Image 1 (tube, one colour):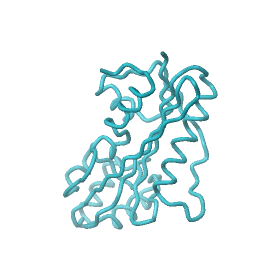
Image 2 (cartoon, helix red, strand yellow):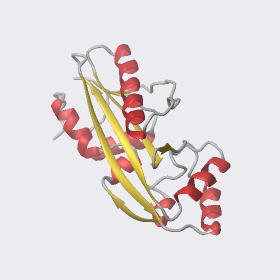
Image 3 (tube, helix red, strand yellow):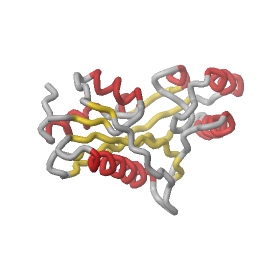
Length: 190
């Protein structure tokens, strides 16, 4: 049974390897990830994960296709994947001293075309950040392309006071839910 990872994220690939899963191929989905008007974070993450899976599954008939999307949300607001230092600064300033949610949605499309979905909702609490801490984090460049402008697996870990939920989900792939979906889809991951 072939497994295709529908993601360009090196983190997702490394996380899969942590549980002994090595995809047969990596085929990123290039889709429009624009947030729909009034779309809530959980719906957005699930919709985008499903759309990525469906696109890649059409290119690999008969294979299992695993896709995902991770969203950082402050209340109902979806924070961007920081592409500029200004984006990252705005995100970190907003998250400073506050709790926020990280939603990690995954979709597994089976060889039969049946889609299975899971959503992991997690809480992250940043310490109150001093301007110098934000400046130092921005200088690291680690924030580039990261949802909410930070990477918990890097330097930002020292700025996070607490988490509730799955560390791997906050990184981008909820391993418990992923393993359960793969097993339900008939993929051997023991």
